[in-house]
Image (cartoon, rainbow, N blue to C red):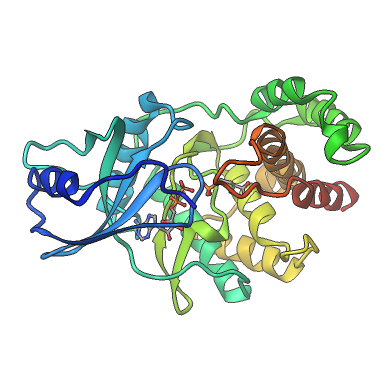
Length: 311
Ligand SMILES: Nc1ncnc2c1ncn2[C@@H]1O[C@H](COP(=O)(O)OP(=O)(O)O)[C@@H](O)[C@H]1O
Ligand SMILES: N[C@@H](CCOP(=O)(O)O)C(=O)O
């Protein structure tokens, strides 16, 4: 459930009156998602998503995220463009939150992706990397090695409560990654959270890429590693190598990886698995049982990490 902030029909009508988008026909809260409040809005002219940014999004980052999606949409990628009101403003204040009216993209996310989905996801990721090459804004990745160390420090002593040995696994892995994390690979603008629930498909074709709220400036190959950790395993965490291969092949069909990137990929995948292990563990420990949000299982990424370490 992700409708944290209620918007009445009257308030929404007033809000839409600032835009050239027609008049309100219907609005419905969207249950999927965890971070923000999302409404599906239909007007006499078109369909939209209305997002109200909740507490975990840093308001100072919003102009970066909105400029990036506008940039990619202008390049013709299926990325939801922020809609501007008559005065040219995309970022608004609504019901005590920052808010944005966003282009609606059709399609559905796939629960159990197949090889063709993974191949298309890899291709799309590379297309986004190329299309963002001239995007000038920068945002450091606060969830890279230093961020993982800080998270581990906060969680120390508590990880064992999730699973015995987890604290040791994370500590060992952090020491390894801090010592070998690549510094000189090609960097650029990355999505950093391209999980299957953020990719909309119409058949085998990608009709939408959403949720750019972890986007940042980091190694392009790390973004591929994040996508690998997200896509190349089944729901129980068992490896699906054919999906991983299809993903990397799709990526390389658009942007071939350098020798150095290929060589670094195993460690980058370990880092990606650790990143989601840590953020999920943080949420696991800090989300009160009464919260509306369903916590995601950190151990699914501990299993991925073990897989990458063994490989
Ligand atoms: N531009 C869009 N077009 C169509 N559906 C969207 C769009 N943006 C979000 N959604 C829908 O809203 C849901 C939640 O969006 P998401 O950005 O993942 O939320 P959160 O950031 O809270 O996790 C998605 O699963 C999707 O169904
Ligand atoms: N993809 C992350 C969680 C981020 O949540 P999202 O709903 O904003 O994609 C994970 O699976 O841990």
